[in-house]
Image 1 (cartoon, rainbow, N blue to C red):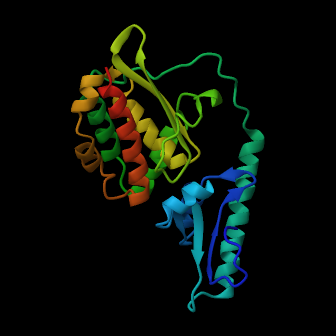
Image 2 (cartoon, one colour):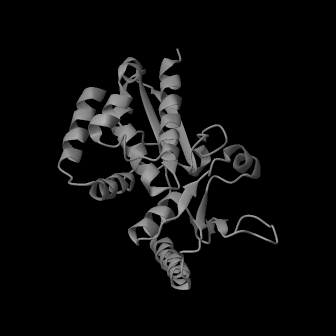
Image 3 (cartoon, rainbow, N blue to C red):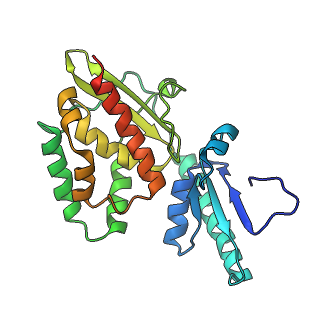
Length: 245
């Protein structure tokens, strides 16, 4: 629980530590249970950066909230924690013996974008598309822990995000990258970026209209400002790398 004031108002911010869970993921799971909380920086990103906090969950109680609703929030958090502990106990990540950067998924970013747009067009609504995004993120190529450091971290995200790019050894005009996040939704967005750009030429990456792609994909109006800011930060990092000689 964040904040040490002895006389707190009915606004509580917290993070999940054991096991560590992304605030974005917990917020999405609470939303699916019909419980509204806020997640992210809460308009105080400089302070949170100074305190070393990526994001928090925030519950705001008011006169119209009942004790039963508070109990429902507590029970939902316990259920989410229990599920996370079960997954953690059953997950055994194999060691990464060598780096495997994603190759180009299509002949051009435009062709890759068309494949994604066609896939999303078959999905009827945002919850279904969200599930599809999260499923894409479950198949990200492994990023070794040794690469997750201060240099690879993407600032401005509401979750912990690392990204490392390189020029392909046998074709230096092409850009490849690995990335990872502690949030399932963000891993899904990383998977979109990898399908679009990893293995493509630097010139093609710089020429691609990413904003138009998001609009046609149907995500431009579905991502919150905080999530969009994090996605834009990853896009900027990749464009900067592609622009380097």
